[in-house]
Image (cartoon, rainbow, N blue to C red):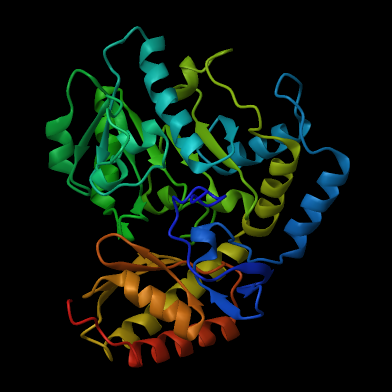
Length: 396
């Protein structure tokens, strides 16, 4: 048999973690890596947070799974907390970000169909967006590399340039159901939407009775310095998908919606076998215990600004490598003048620093939100050393 036991859809590197220690991962050979990737913005409390670990342990000893055919006191608690701290009136729990976005797409379409507008099925989405790997979520993305081998795509999505309000306005038509947008494109290169763009989307949605659907899978749960990135734009969505950080490493996502937006999500309209199981929502409650307070959020903003300022000073030493810094809070990106993946591999293999490559020649910096001064200093030591001894490939 030539195929590997794990289906070979990931280009897995030689790092093989077996243990985590706050902002570090330890491989099976004992090598310590500084983890400024955090499972791609998932491990927001690091790898050994006692509150999160304790909550999962206690719940695992009590009840791990029960069908959604029954009442869910654990799920009701987390849903109420999310309702209390957001725009939303109701929540559907999922196991992942892609599932949360799927639910958001269905919610937006169901709203119009419940109103008798059966032609309003099209969501306007944005070039270079990433919404997941299911058939609907790859169809919602313009990235052709994700389409290969899976055509025909699902209809019902129209792509326009990101942060271009006039393009959106021109794209709105009789079949438009709403807009699906990341406030900050993560996979697309830490590209931050302007305030005028987000405000304009909200205004267009209100004018045409459309759904403003936010994908905050990567930006949400304190990553940008507020609980959710939409708060920094002074707007509220109708529907929002979250995941990644809400479970702190345990698989958990959610689709949040206003009562109006969820009008079509009635009995039998949607479901999930595992979504909102007691073990997952115990993790979610533990995460909110840690992050849903102003002291924690202020610390993320302070650390994010400090790291940003040092990065802006640092990149001036390597003008051949770096162009600019962008992002919010501790969701930061280095726009590079060279392809970032070889540099990411160099940092990983030679300096034991884990980062994440993204589109638009961007290196993502996504540390645990609990990092301290020592880890920040270690990061700059490693990236400085890695930049100093990096040889740009001749083909670049």
